[in-house]
Length: 388
Image (cartoon, rainbow, N blue to C red):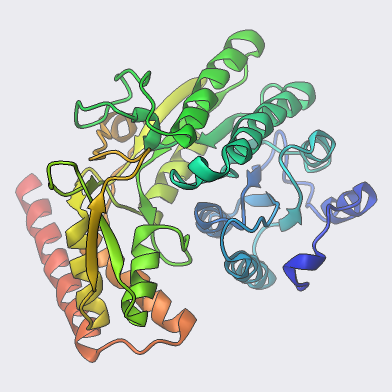
C-alpha cells in the first residue's frame, strides 16, 4: 500500500477504502476482537505502537498524512516495515494516506472499519518549530483533534480515545516532579498551549457528549527510527559530520535536564491506556530520571567513538530548564514501569542508526553495551531478590 514515492501519495477514494476494509475478518469489531484506528501510524511513536499492537493480535487501521516536517523517507521506511511485518501473518493491518482534518474520511474509517478503539498520535510536533509555523500547530493539533472527536461523536460515542498530549503542557511550572495534579496555566510555547487545549477540549467532549478520553503526557521520547529534529538524532548526525552542536544552557549557566524516555516504555503506556478504556484521564509517561543534556552527549560520544564539537548558547524561547515526570498515577492504574535507562537507550538507537545509514561504530561500543546489559541484569536480579 506504500510502494510509491511520497510525492505520488493521494487521499484515498471512498470506494477504495471500502474495498480495502472488506478484508477485515468478521471476528474483529464491536462485540469481538479489537480494531484500532491509529492516527500518525507512520510517525515515530505511531510506528512503534503499531508494531506492538500487531504483535499482540490487534487489528489496525492507520492514518497518516506523510507531511514534510522532517525527512519523509523515514516515514516511508516505517510504512514499508509495517507492510512487511503484516505480510508475514497476523491480524488485519492497513495504512491509509489522509488527513485527520478530513471528517468524511474519518467517519468512513470508523464505520466501515468497525473501529472499537482510537489512538490519536498524529500531531504537529516540535517546540521551536512552533515559533516559525504557528498556524500549522493550530490546524493539526486543535482543528484536527476536534474533527476527530466530532467524527467519533457522530459514529459511535462509546469508542474510547487515547490521545497524545505532552510534557510541554507543564510550561513554566517549577514544582518537580511534574504531577498530573499540578496546574498547567502558564505555557512556555505555542506547542504546549495546543496540547493543553487538547486536554481542555477532551474534558468538554466528555462532559457534553460522554466521550471516553485519555490524554498521555509524553516526556522527551527517543529511540530507533525517531525524529531527526530531536537532539539525540541531530547531535548524532552532526558529531559524525564534524559539525558543531549547540548545547543550550540556563541563563545562570546551569545545564538543561530532560526526562528522556525510551520509545518502548512509552508504547507500553499507550497500550495499557488503550486497554484501560477510562472515562476521562490524563497520565504522565516518562522515565522518572532527569538527565543533563551533557550526559546524553557523553553517551553519544562514547558510542560513536568521536568527540563532539560543542558550542553553548542561552536557552531558546519556548524551552524549559527541566522536565521530570511523576508517574505514580500511571503506575497505579496502568502498571506503567519504565525499564530502559538513557545509556542503554542511546546504545540501541546508535545500533539502529549505524545499520540504517551504513555507519561503522567502534568495536568497543558493542562491547560496552554488552557489559552494560549484563550489569543492568545483575542490578535487576539483586533488586528482585531484596524485594522477596
